[in-house]
Image (cartoon, rainbow, N blue to C red):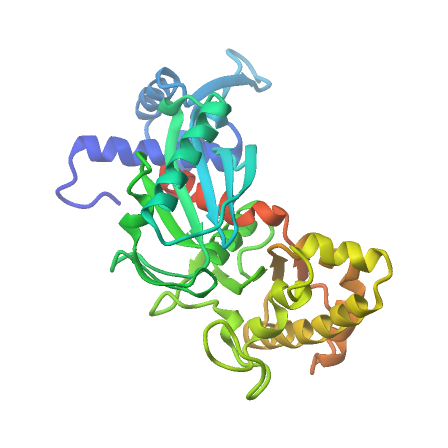
Length: 374
């Protein structure tokens, strides 16, 4: 229903977004089906499709069988008509991805860049984005903008990155990070964005919890395909739930947090540069590393079981650990089964589809989501 006071241009733009959205989800429809599905007149649909064709957003993609007369023409969205960049910022790296309207990753790159709260770093980030676009010959007229994923609490209304413990930052103005990026920018928590990307890619899932296991431990709560942020934008901070009373010191300053037992730092333990080296040592039979992993899986099972008991939903594991944890999934699910008070199966556990790129892809999808108005 169109609100009173809405002018004809606004109505047309609303209908245009509805048609784009429909073509996206249905992967092509006839003019007649669009009109019937959206309750629009054929002339209105024809005019909007004409505009989409002229702007290179849609095309005719074949015909259907006819019962007589002209065969109905299928109209499809051109997925690479618009592109989006996603950037993930971590303690020691910057990851960049370029996606199309379907969420396909066209190009990606991961660079070693140590985070510093400095103008030099923010300038460097802007230059790296420009370099990434140039290297891949991106038509900037197609660019919807840049999405940024950060490891911490984002207070958009206040315009600040409130708390990013792994980066050692509190109350950083968002404009400081984005000032050297000359495009429309969206920014959000890395775990929320990774969860957003995973839900986007899994048609059969509408509700789920995403658990991000990196140098920090975070998460996202997805309800009806949307991220639940909570009253203070802190929902899903599973890394700071207590799993051991008065336990190990966490980066947040408290003791016994899930993150203190299940971040990737627990595995590397100042002996290895990253988790790749740690799991390589396990493959070579390093007994100390094998024992450390077994302890890690014990605590990981505690955290996952707590999340399952609270939300009773599917759980997706992602982050730096996901490409390795699949090899040990049987060990993890056995621990989960032993802890489950209801004796349920453990088929609620999934491994990330996008892997280490999930947060960056989710950041890029923010711009696609806005464009499609889903």
